[in-house]
Amino acid sequence: MKPIVPFVHNLTGPLVAEWTQALQRAAPTLDIRAFGALSEAERETVKVAIVANPDPANLLEFPNLAWVQSLWAGVDRLIHEMPGENVRIARLVDPQLADTMAEAVLAWSLFLHRDMPRYAAQQAEKQWRQHRLPTPSERCIGVLGLGHLGQKSLRRLQQNDFNVIGWSRSPKSISEVTTFHGTEGLKKLTALVDILVVLLPLTPQTRGLLDEDLFSSLKKGAALINFARGDIIDGSALLGALDTGKVDHAVLDVFPVEPLPGDDLFWTHPKVTVLPHISAPTNMTTASSIVAENLGTFFSTGQMPETVSRKAGY
Image (cartoon, rainbow, N blue to C red; front, side, top):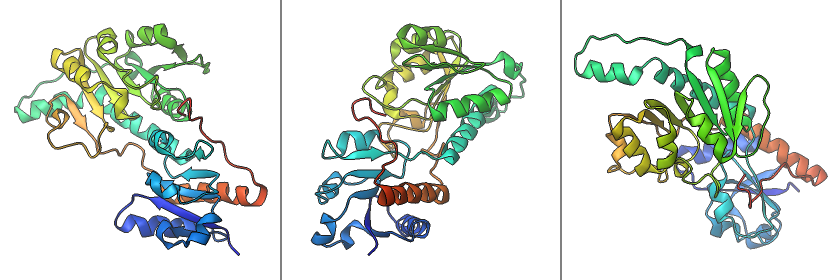
């Protein structure tokens, strides 16, 4: 009999069938089913579930659940909402995701480097005006967060000749990269950068990290890209920094509430580019393959993939 693995999610529309079919194709030795399709007796046999922003109450229906495999790289919501301290959480670690994120970081860094917001504003006013273009090596980009995504993005920027530096909470050594750490290191980095890229996990220590003090420490006219989590930024402080010109432009892909409410000031701010959480979408094919491999290893050997620390938040 195939092991039963429930797929517990908040997906809607065609995505439900598409993901279910992709997962089942990748893992033919497993019986992947919707939460509502399991009997009470079958729920008692469940050791692992595949999840995508699940309703925590549904997971309580599996008394013998040992771990969950998330389809997303970000698991901050799971960490806070997952019932049962003994249930482990495995985030999706997909090399394709890192490549996709690095591509997005490069694309929007070039958007800012080439002064696209300024030229778009000039077009709206029918202004024909040229501005000096620095070389990439003259443009300092600071990457906050030096995990897998951060390092991949950092290297992609280097390959395009940008001057790149990085910051992490604890010391980290990366070849051919100047790195900073801790509170004092963050102040040193922010004083140097022209573009600040946020790729940090959301933890109690990073929540609200980009506040009024941090924005005041930036070079005047620096730009911001946030591809991490919305709660890492103090929205009011960012609006203030944009209004005073301390921050020249912000590219925001993540927000505390998503979708972004229609009355949010970021929608209409002339110095903000709003993106609908599209910087690094999960690739269905590669993600399904990785999930299938993790589950196959677990059912054949009992070994889980690496899981996150609920205390640390990542």
